[in-house]
Length: 206
Image (cartoon, rainbow, N blue to C red; front, top):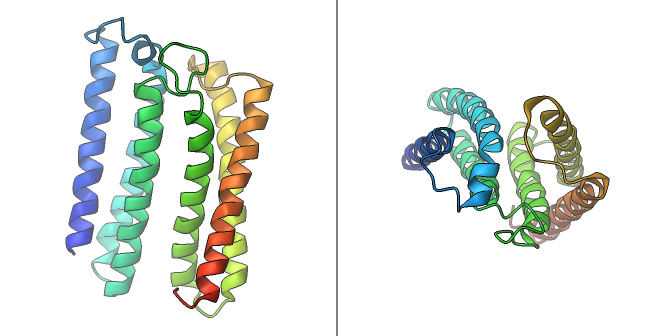
């Protein structure tokens, strides 16, 4: 229960942070010399909506897990913590403008790093849930499925970024080369997660 309470607290803190920053940007209270923050205000609004929806879903699972076994609670708590890591990486990229290569505030390697680490974490998250639900299924098959889920989500996200820029006036896509590079690093991250889980399961640690 302590892990669940911690996860819920972290989610609330993250949402509060997102809402405060978004509000400051909307009313132009944040100084304009922090260029990337102002530029990515719309991105933040969209991200906040996604995080709110995701958090509601996670909260429903967490509420349900109280009635379940302790193992189920631990699995969901771990899942929430992984999602918080993903949200934090994405938030920092938008808040500090690290995603935008070429600007004075950008960190050239950050976008590539995010597209490796996030799919890697998603493989762990997917496997964690699949392994709990389907314990009789081969671990190798579950790891492969978790990796495919991660890569599929990465591909869907690229579609979302394109149409978000098209209809919601965001700044998520840097061109065709950016999309291709993102998909490449998404695959590297997912494959990395696959290889790590294969190594760990063969060592009997899972």
